[in-house]
Image (cartoon, rainbow, N blue to C red; front, side, top):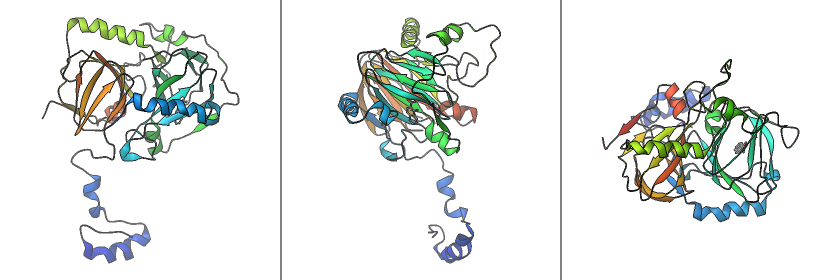
Length: 347
Ligand code: 1HN
């Protein structure tokens, strides 16, 4: 049944002539398809860690990592409940792994990032190389790589998962496979990738094989040190403070082809200018506190809080203490397609 807003008198034509033949009049929907500016179901939202931590920890009482396969609470955008997404194109969740647990090996066409929120010393393994994760580390699981996680530390560990699930779903390019054993065998020592590719050096005959960075852990100690060193020049961007993007050393592009990742420092008292861009963005607060005005909302945030800014909605950040924010979005996809836009100030 095709309903009409534009030409109710044409309802018989729509429903008796067009509809049975799987045809529909474009002129009824053209203005909802081709809009002046982005409009989506994605809403601004904040998850305060202090309010959700108990619920995350309770997940360990109700289900094992093994039974769950991945014990994750999805950060569901309030405008898109039940659709497993934080923005229109991206998924986010908080994953809990308890001491002694293993999240079994598998692989899938969706790419994942891990951003470590609480705890220290658990590992993730990617295609036979383990990395030990610390708070603030940014870790990549590229598309179609075997990966398992394990916590050999004495504390629970929680990290933010970011995946390109909705994007890959739109493209109908979803594949997945379990590994026959819980762990994929280790074939390279810990630290191998960062030594080879992440030290401003590259094996002399290395040829780029893959659009994802060959470095799969970008440790927070290095990122934090870079920001701290840079602040000495006092060259603050009016909208971003000091903002760095994670790069793939093979090509200078984003570390992951579908997800852009960023880390920024806002000094105490910083009041950012108003800014908007077409890449809806998920933020994870690493250090400090402040507030962000996002569209009509004001979110007060502190360490370990997560918030989401939809596409083309104005955002403005104010830091009440030195603050460090990690963020991710689909910016590289929009850029490669020539779609990405930004606007600074109150224009
Ligand atoms: C996945 O493989 C992980 O490997 C986490 O830790 C979250 C969400 C949907 C699909 C696969 C992981 C996931 C996921």
